[in-house]
Image 1 (cartoon, rainbow, N blue to C red):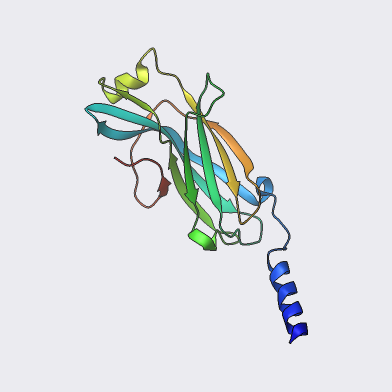
Image 2 (image 1 turned 30 degrees about the horizontal axis):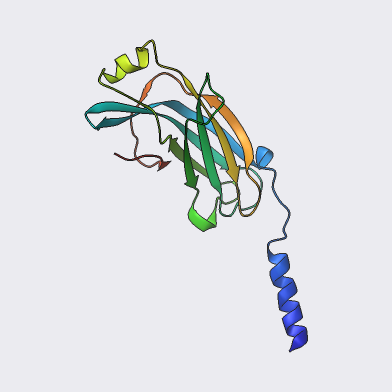
Length: 168
């Protein structure tokens, strides 16, 4: 009985000890689009938030279990985080080897104003934004997988994307 417990303990300890994947090599990240998502009218004002739509492809040859993506949005003139968005990919199953998934991540913060949405984008006080993308799977540490500028254009919602971000 004692031997069985020792064997079981060894199996459990080694279950999570598989080789890790370098996400900078094993996760292909392609930008589908970036822009400013129209959140509609909030408290009587138009609201726009930066967003990014990405296509993720697992090129590692292994399942990336519990894959998570975190987006940090910044104004291009600032070092501090302005807003963020977080998304878990396929829950605890992660992203299978060779699988792809398109996701949309929106910031929780953005611009509000009484101008039309297009006038907001053209306002002289409007500051462009950028987004840094980080990914992790299982208990592996966060890995920076890219940084992208946010285009100064309006983005319409699309169906079928996995998305994260504020709701109205």
